Length: 146
Image 1 (tube, helix red, strand yellow):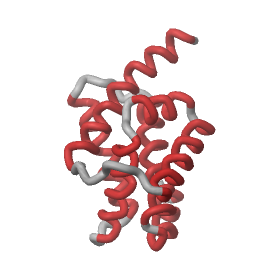
Image 2 (image 1 turned 90 degrees about the horizontal axis):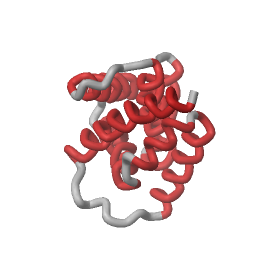
Image 3 (image 1 turned 60 degrees about the horizontal axis):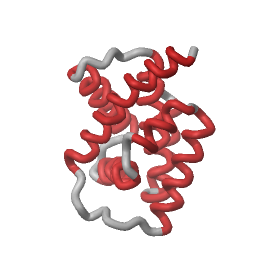
Image 4 (image 1 turned 180 degrees about the vertical axis):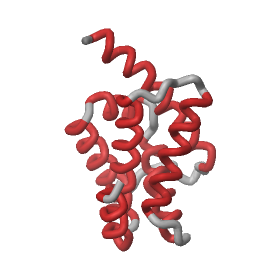
């Protein structure tokens, strides 16, 4: 079992590295220091992921920086504010992550698909809670219906 988890973790590392690259491709240097909202968001995100799936938690904390995780949540909020529905944002996020993984030769296993979905849903939910609470009901509805 240890070899299996190691193989899943190695594949997942590549996917999360890709997610980090997607996140950084549009990020700016504006995220230098975290504030109390950022700290609360990160604590909630990491705590939730740790309680749900060790592999996703490990990948989110080792392969992505705090700044990337914050930027991802804020980007979701910016998309909501521009009129894109949470369901569409989630769909675009997961499609882009799957596409990038496939382009890099990573097989989309159930474990990888689960990690991408768990991470995206967690960032959307906790991001809305901390950065754009006005969209929280729509986010909850979108994630319930997926």
